[in-house]
Length: 242
Image (cartoon, rainbow, N blue to C red; front, side):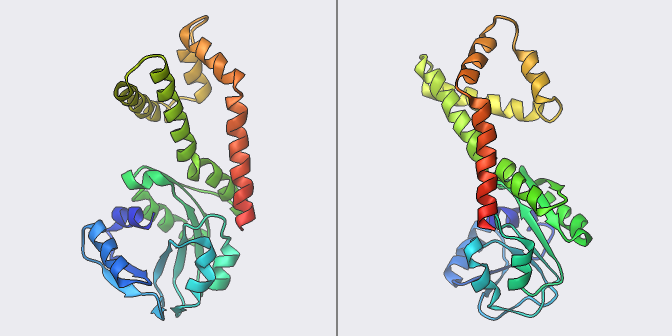
Protein backbone atom coordinates (compact mmCIF):
# COMPACT_ATOMS: atom_id res chain seq x y z
CA UNK A 1 0.00 0.00 0.00
CA UNK A 2 2.87 2.39 0.78
CA UNK A 3 4.27 1.85 -2.71
CA UNK A 4 0.88 2.36 -4.35
CA UNK A 5 0.36 5.63 -2.49
CA UNK A 6 3.88 6.80 -3.35
CA UNK A 7 3.27 5.98 -7.03
CA UNK A 8 0.24 8.25 -6.97
CA UNK A 9 2.04 11.10 -5.21
CA UNK A 10 5.51 11.03 -6.76
CA UNK A 11 4.77 13.45 -9.63
CA UNK A 12 3.41 16.22 -7.39
CA UNK A 13 5.07 15.80 -3.99
CA UNK A 14 8.54 15.48 -2.49
CA UNK A 15 8.67 12.02 -0.96
CA UNK A 16 10.95 10.85 1.83
CA UNK A 17 10.83 7.13 2.57
CA UNK A 18 11.64 5.94 6.08
CA UNK A 19 12.31 2.39 7.26
CA UNK A 20 14.52 0.11 9.33
CA UNK A 21 16.60 -1.35 6.52
CA UNK A 22 18.41 0.63 3.80
CA UNK A 23 18.46 -2.38 1.45
CA UNK A 24 14.65 -2.48 1.57
CA UNK A 25 14.48 1.27 1.12
CA UNK A 26 16.66 0.95 -1.99
CA UNK A 27 14.31 -1.74 -3.31
CA UNK A 28 11.34 0.55 -2.62
CA UNK A 29 13.01 3.35 -4.56
CA UNK A 30 13.72 1.02 -7.48
CA UNK A 31 10.10 -0.16 -7.55
CA UNK A 32 8.91 3.44 -7.40
CA UNK A 33 11.01 4.29 -10.44
CA UNK A 34 12.33 7.65 -9.26
CA UNK A 35 14.84 9.08 -6.82
CA UNK A 36 13.56 9.74 -3.30
CA UNK A 37 15.13 10.79 -0.02
CA UNK A 38 15.71 7.69 2.12
CA UNK A 39 16.14 7.72 5.88
CA UNK A 40 16.45 5.14 8.63
CA UNK A 41 13.71 5.07 11.24
CA UNK A 42 15.91 5.40 14.31
CA UNK A 43 15.69 8.98 15.67
CA UNK A 44 13.99 10.21 12.48
CA UNK A 45 12.99 13.87 12.83
CA UNK A 46 9.31 14.40 11.99
CA UNK A 47 9.15 18.05 13.07
CA UNK A 48 6.53 19.94 11.06
CA UNK A 49 6.34 17.16 8.47
CA UNK A 50 3.39 15.45 6.84
CA UNK A 51 3.74 11.80 7.82
CA UNK A 52 2.07 8.95 5.93
CA UNK A 53 2.07 6.00 8.34
CA UNK A 54 2.07 2.63 6.55
CA UNK A 55 3.14 0.03 9.13
CA UNK A 56 1.49 -2.95 10.80
CA UNK A 57 -0.99 -1.84 13.49
CA UNK A 58 0.90 -3.67 16.22
CA UNK A 59 4.07 -1.70 15.38
CA UNK A 60 2.64 1.75 16.15
CA UNK A 61 4.12 2.00 19.65
CA UNK A 62 7.55 0.76 18.57
CA UNK A 63 7.71 3.02 15.53
CA UNK A 64 6.32 6.07 17.31
CA UNK A 65 8.93 5.80 20.05
CA UNK A 66 11.70 6.28 17.49
CA UNK A 67 10.44 9.55 16.04
CA UNK A 68 11.89 12.89 17.16
CA UNK A 69 9.91 16.13 17.14
CA UNK A 70 6.27 16.89 16.40
CA UNK A 71 4.67 16.20 13.02
CA UNK A 72 2.32 18.67 11.37
CA UNK A 73 -0.14 15.88 10.56
CA UNK A 74 -0.14 12.09 10.52
CA UNK A 75 -2.12 10.22 7.88
CA UNK A 76 -2.56 6.61 8.97
CA UNK A 77 -3.67 3.72 6.75
CA UNK A 78 -3.68 1.27 9.68
CA UNK A 79 -6.87 -0.78 10.04
CA UNK A 80 -8.55 -0.58 13.43
CA UNK A 81 -6.00 1.85 14.88
CA UNK A 82 -7.85 4.71 16.53
CA UNK A 83 -7.06 8.40 16.38
CA UNK A 84 -6.45 8.28 20.12
CA UNK A 85 -3.93 5.44 19.79
CA UNK A 86 -2.08 7.25 17.01
CA UNK A 87 -1.98 10.56 18.90
CA UNK A 88 -0.77 8.88 22.08
CA UNK A 89 2.12 7.14 20.31
CA UNK A 90 3.19 9.82 17.80
CA UNK A 91 3.64 13.48 18.71
CA UNK A 92 1.63 15.39 16.12
CA UNK A 93 -0.60 18.43 15.72
CA UNK A 94 -3.30 16.49 13.86
CA UNK A 95 -4.26 12.96 12.87
CA UNK A 96 -6.31 11.62 9.96
CA UNK A 97 -7.23 7.98 9.46
CA UNK A 98 -7.44 6.68 5.89
CA UNK A 99 -8.55 3.32 4.55
CA UNK A 100 -7.51 2.82 0.92
CA UNK A 101 -7.92 -0.52 -0.83
CA UNK A 102 -5.99 -2.74 -3.22
CA UNK A 103 -7.20 -0.82 -6.27
CA UNK A 104 -4.73 1.91 -5.26
CA UNK A 105 -2.22 -0.01 -7.38
CA UNK A 106 -4.16 1.07 -10.48
CA UNK A 107 -5.18 4.47 -9.05
CA UNK A 108 -8.76 3.28 -8.52
CA UNK A 109 -8.82 3.04 -4.73
CA UNK A 110 -11.99 3.89 -2.84
CA UNK A 111 -10.42 5.57 0.20
CA UNK A 112 -12.44 6.53 3.27
CA UNK A 113 -11.16 9.24 5.63
CA UNK A 114 -11.88 10.66 9.06
CA UNK A 115 -10.11 12.71 11.71
CA UNK A 116 -9.08 16.35 12.08
CA UNK A 117 -11.44 18.27 9.81
CA UNK A 118 -8.87 21.03 9.31
CA UNK A 119 -7.06 18.56 7.06
CA UNK A 120 -10.09 17.21 5.18
CA UNK A 121 -9.30 19.06 1.95
CA UNK A 122 -5.62 18.09 2.05
CA UNK A 123 -6.48 14.47 2.81
CA UNK A 124 -8.91 14.30 -0.10
CA UNK A 125 -6.26 15.77 -2.41
CA UNK A 126 -3.54 13.36 -1.24
CA UNK A 127 -5.64 10.23 -1.54
CA UNK A 128 -7.28 11.54 -4.70
CA UNK A 129 -3.94 10.72 -6.32
CA UNK A 130 -4.77 7.00 -5.98
CA UNK A 131 -8.49 7.08 -6.78
CA UNK A 132 -11.55 8.58 -5.13
CA UNK A 133 -12.12 9.39 -1.47
CA UNK A 134 -14.96 10.05 0.93
CA UNK A 135 -14.76 11.85 4.27
CA UNK A 136 -16.74 10.18 7.05
CA UNK A 137 -18.02 11.74 10.26
CA UNK A 138 -16.75 9.20 12.80
CA UNK A 139 -14.34 6.38 13.51
CA UNK A 140 -17.23 3.93 13.78
CA UNK A 141 -18.13 4.77 10.19
CA UNK A 142 -14.58 4.28 8.92
CA UNK A 143 -14.47 0.87 10.63
CA UNK A 144 -17.68 -0.06 8.82
CA UNK A 145 -16.25 1.32 5.57
CA UNK A 146 -13.13 -0.80 6.14
CA UNK A 147 -15.38 -3.85 6.08
CA UNK A 148 -16.95 -2.67 2.81
CA UNK A 149 -14.31 -0.92 0.70
CA UNK A 150 -11.11 -2.05 2.40
CA UNK A 151 -12.01 -5.74 2.46
CA UNK A 152 -14.35 -5.58 -0.53
CA UNK A 153 -11.79 -6.48 -3.23
CA UNK A 154 -11.37 -9.90 -1.59
CA UNK A 155 -15.13 -10.49 -1.63
CA UNK A 156 -15.41 -9.45 -5.27
CA UNK A 157 -12.40 -11.61 -6.16
CA UNK A 158 -14.18 -14.61 -4.64
CA UNK A 159 -17.29 -13.84 -6.67
CA UNK A 160 -15.25 -13.34 -9.86
CA UNK A 161 -13.43 -16.63 -9.41
CA UNK A 162 -16.64 -18.51 -8.62
CA UNK A 163 -18.47 -17.15 -11.67
CA UNK A 164 -15.58 -18.11 -13.95
CA UNK A 165 -15.49 -21.57 -12.36
CA UNK A 166 -19.21 -21.91 -13.05
CA UNK A 167 -18.67 -21.18 -16.73
CA UNK A 168 -15.82 -23.71 -16.90
CA UNK A 169 -18.04 -26.30 -15.20
CA UNK A 170 -20.57 -25.86 -18.01
CA UNK A 171 -17.90 -26.34 -20.69
CA UNK A 172 -16.31 -22.95 -21.40
CA UNK A 173 -12.52 -22.91 -21.79
CA UNK A 174 -10.71 -21.40 -18.79
CA UNK A 175 -9.04 -18.62 -20.82
CA UNK A 176 -12.37 -17.65 -22.35
CA UNK A 177 -14.12 -17.73 -18.98
CA UNK A 178 -11.48 -15.49 -17.39
CA UNK A 179 -11.53 -13.01 -20.28
CA UNK A 180 -15.33 -12.77 -20.19
CA UNK A 181 -15.35 -12.40 -16.39
CA UNK A 182 -12.84 -9.53 -16.59
CA UNK A 183 -14.93 -7.80 -19.25
CA UNK A 184 -18.01 -8.26 -17.08
CA UNK A 185 -16.39 -6.62 -14.06
CA UNK A 186 -14.93 -3.80 -16.13
CA UNK A 187 -18.29 -2.88 -17.62
CA UNK A 188 -20.16 -3.37 -14.36
CA UNK A 189 -17.72 -1.03 -12.60
CA UNK A 190 -18.76 1.75 -14.97
CA UNK A 191 -22.49 0.99 -14.81
CA UNK A 192 -22.69 0.92 -11.01
CA UNK A 193 -21.40 4.51 -10.89
CA UNK A 194 -24.62 5.74 -12.47
CA UNK A 195 -27.30 3.11 -11.78
CA UNK A 196 -28.68 1.87 -8.45
CA UNK A 197 -27.97 -1.87 -7.99
CA UNK A 198 -31.65 -2.76 -7.74
CA UNK A 199 -32.47 -0.92 -10.98
CA UNK A 200 -29.49 -2.49 -12.72
CA UNK A 201 -30.59 -5.96 -11.61
CA UNK A 202 -34.16 -5.42 -12.76
CA UNK A 203 -32.94 -4.15 -16.12
CA UNK A 204 -31.10 -7.42 -16.77
CA UNK A 205 -33.56 -9.90 -15.26
CA UNK A 206 -36.44 -10.46 -17.68
CA UNK A 207 -39.36 -12.67 -16.54
CA UNK A 208 -38.63 -16.37 -16.79
CA UNK A 209 -35.24 -15.74 -18.39
CA UNK A 210 -31.72 -17.01 -17.88
CA UNK A 211 -30.77 -14.27 -15.39
CA UNK A 212 -33.85 -14.98 -13.27
CA UNK A 213 -32.90 -18.66 -13.14
CA UNK A 214 -29.35 -17.88 -12.08
CA UNK A 215 -30.47 -15.21 -9.62
CA UNK A 216 -32.77 -17.74 -7.99
CA UNK A 217 -29.78 -20.00 -7.44
CA UNK A 218 -27.91 -17.16 -5.71
CA UNK A 219 -30.89 -16.53 -3.43
CA UNK A 220 -31.11 -20.28 -2.69
CA UNK A 221 -27.46 -20.11 -1.65
CA UNK A 222 -28.12 -17.15 0.68
CA UNK A 223 -25.53 -15.05 -1.16
CA UNK A 224 -27.23 -11.80 -0.12
CA UNK A 225 -27.23 -12.80 3.56
CA UNK A 226 -23.63 -14.01 3.32
CA UNK A 227 -22.51 -10.63 1.94
CA UNK A 228 -24.28 -8.79 4.75
CA UNK A 229 -22.70 -11.13 7.30
CA UNK A 230 -19.25 -10.65 5.74
CA UNK A 231 -19.43 -6.89 6.27
CA UNK A 232 -20.65 -7.39 9.84
CA UNK A 233 -17.85 -9.80 10.74
CA UNK A 234 -15.17 -7.65 9.13
CA UNK A 235 -16.50 -4.58 10.98
CA UNK A 236 -16.43 -6.43 14.30
CA UNK A 237 -12.84 -7.50 13.58
CA UNK A 238 -11.88 -3.89 12.92
CA UNK A 239 -13.42 -2.94 16.26
CA UNK A 240 -11.53 -5.77 17.97
CA UNK A 241 -8.26 -4.52 16.48
CA UNK A 242 -8.87 -1.09 17.97
